[in-house]
Length: 335
Image 1 (cartoon, rainbow, N blue to C red):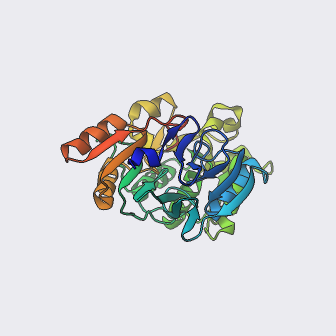
Image 2 (cartoon, helix red, strand yellow; image 1 turned 135 degrees about the vertical axis):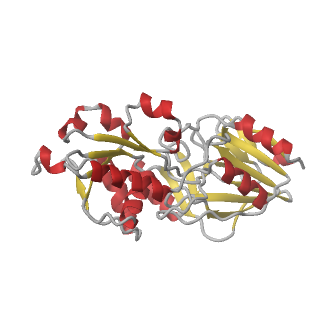
């Protein structure tokens, strides 16, 4: 049987008939395998969800305990109908995983979103040899070569030293990016309190419960503090908060944004970002190509992102590839 009869796109998402399940479905289905907790991959309303324990916990935090009919923790080798399934670390966010599927004599690996840079809040990416490698391509252009995250944090700390009278507001996605920035700051020696927007509190608390030492976190809406008290302090918030009156409570704030997209200066200017921090939780161009070389698949399928550039590069190396044209996955401006 051809590979594209064993795993193929449907309006609901990527479907495996042998196991009768979808991977990261965009519409409710009877059985879903979920790679990680970001909203464009993990949606509520499925009949049953199989995911890592941490992803299941994160979905419950974000959607409520009844986000699915039944839930199953992905552990070891699992048999679903005529398919064998295993989950492997993806390095993207806490609990993120690649899904290995063996069915009809073919081994597939669905990466979800993944990152090859060290991430102190996620288990490191594990290359899994396979016949068909199904990869994201969020940053699949040669221009995207992400710098050392520690060097970007050093820019933030240098700005605080240069402007001690100003607060530093760092835009960071609530799941993964905020906690990664906090950990990078701690590793760089910043042991002062870090102030966080209320929308980050529950997920930060969960990371701490999972053994991620985020240190002294305090609410940024502490009414006992005067505006001047936030001078020289770091405040983390979702980028949407910066357009609201919420940001006006801080003294002459330096607006920073932690994202792989901050490598594009026009995006930083459009968002009014004074201090762009190029910190990404996705694979960049060199890491996408390195990963495909390591996995060495017979064919690479591309789920979302810059499909054309990656296909062209793989063709130059005599590697087969094709786009899946899956819908419902965001470009993730916070990537």
